[in-house]
Length: 507
Image (cartoon, rainbow, N blue to C red):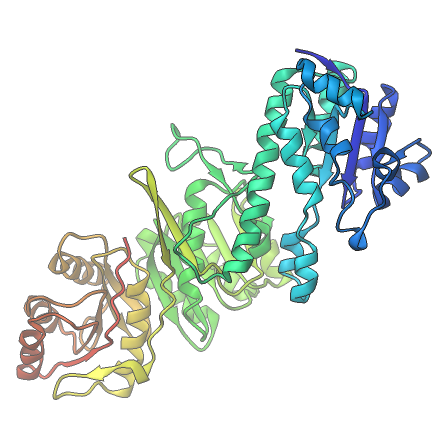
C-alpha cells in the first residue's frame, strides 16, 4: 500500500547528510516538525519547521531530557490509519499525522570509549529518540522510520523512486533496520553497565555487516560484523576475505604475547614459523627456516617496524598478508609491488576483546578469552634436573606457542625458534611425532630442544619419544593422576620438567 508522506518528524544528533534529505523532502512539499538544535538547523537552511513545543503546547523540560515524549507526538506516529476509533481520537485531540520519522541517536558508544565521565556517558543514553524509533517501527504499516543517518541513502532512493510516497515493503524493511539499531544501542548500554565482566547474560548485536566475497568456501556466504578499521589501516591489497580474517586474528593473538622483537608466519590459524631475535631480519630468517614450505601463501606478522632490508627479504616469498605496527617508506614501495598483497598497519597492540563466542546446537558458547601468559615465576620444577637459563627461556617461548596451536598440540623450540609443531591431532603422541617429523624435514636439530604440551601427559610415552629425539626439557600443565610416571621417566633419563598448572586447550 502506497502512502503519501505529508509530515516528517526529524530529531537527529548528527546533522551530516541531513541537508540533502531536507531538500528532497521539500521538493515533495513535506512539512517538518522538529526539536531544538535540529529545528534551528532546518530553519537556517531556509525551510519552514514547526517545533515540537508548538505541537504539544508543552516546553522541553529537565534540561532537554524530555522533549518528544508526549501523546501528541506519539499519537501522531502510532495511530492506525484504517482504525476508526484511532482516527476519532486523533481528530478529537487535534493530533497531527506523522508519516515519516527520522532519528539519529545520541552517540552512546563513542562517548563510552572516550575519556568522558560516568555522568556524561549516562546523559548520552537516548530516551526520546529510541522511543520514536520503536513507535515508528511498530506502526510500519503506516509510518516510514529512518533510525540512523546510515540509512539516508536508502531513504533518498525511495523518495526519488516513489515521488515522496512510501510502499509497505519499503516501510517494513526500514522497520527491520530500525529494530536492529535499537537492539544494538541497548546492547551497548547493557555492556557498559555489565562492565565487561558478566557472562551470565548474552548480548551481541551488530549492524551493517560487511559482505565478504564468500565464507570459508566459495559456496558459503560470509559477512563480517565489527570495526576492522579500529585495529588496522589497510595500506594496500585486495579485499580481505573470511579466511584472511581468521588468520589475522590468530596472528594478532599470538604476537600480543611477545614483547621482544618477534616475527611469526601463520597458516590456517596455526603458526608454521616463529622466532624472537635481537633484530627483525634475523627473526624473519629463522621464522622462515622453521617451515618455508608451509610459509608459502601465509600471513606474516611482527611487532616491530619493517625497514627496507627486511622488506627485500620478505618480498622473495609469496604471501597473502603482512601485519606490522609501521613500515618505512622504502619498505612499502617494495611490498606494494604485488598488486593483491594485503598490507596492514596495526593500530592496537592486541585484540581488546575479553570474551569470545561460538555458535552451535541452536545456541551460543561464551567464554573468557585465554589471556593467561606464564612467566618464570609460574614454573614449578618437578624433576631432579632443573632447566638451564636458556632452556627456561625456550620453555616459556614454547608455552606461548602451544597456547595458540589447535589441540592436541605440541610445540618444539630451540633458541627461541619454533622448529616443529603438532596440531589438531587426536592423540598427544601423534602431535609429538608430527612435530618431530616436521623438524627433521626442515633439517632443524632436535638435540637440546624443548617441548611444550597444551595439556598434561596421561602416560610417559611422550617424554620417552621426546627424549629419544634429543629433547632435554619439557613444559606442561601437570594435573594427571599419572604425573609421577612422566616425572620418574625424566628423572631416570636426566630430563628437566616444569609444570604451570594452566592448561591451554584450543579447539
